[in-house]
Image (cartoon, rainbow, N blue to C red; front, top):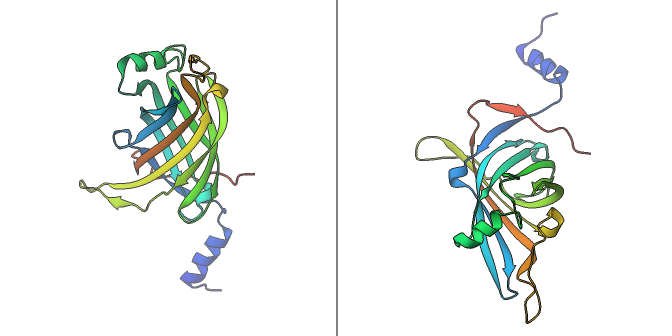
Length: 209
């Protein structure tokens, strides 16, 4: 019995394994930022940032919940525009960057949270302590072509953590009451993504339970 080409293609599609493939992207550290804000002296917010050292994002546009992300920040790159404060932040009182040189995030679950919005749950490792956190994500954007002909996408994520839960407990009581440094840290990640050079595609994540 002869079969048409359309029938053959349909048969192959039905018989093929039912797994998806995600487009793999590198995080472009030169055009990405990891910013934070923390209450200072009970009266203002001090802002700073870390360099995004590396990272990979696998995006499944057909089922975004199967996407994954991993990112690495350089702990010693902490910058609040005040050298003495930055040295203190790198010390064992805070990040202890010599002992814990990186801050990492690895996703464990991606869920839709509205149009172009996601909830990305993952493990944040900071100061040698790993805790689950949830990122509120906007994006990813559609691909656009840059001035050099390369393709780029963007994504922005926000979250809040309690620094004491990660062993960053240093503080100093103020004479008027209160403490020098707040416990809650607000984090904003703005990431630019470029197609991964060593792999055109990567397996998408398995369905999260």
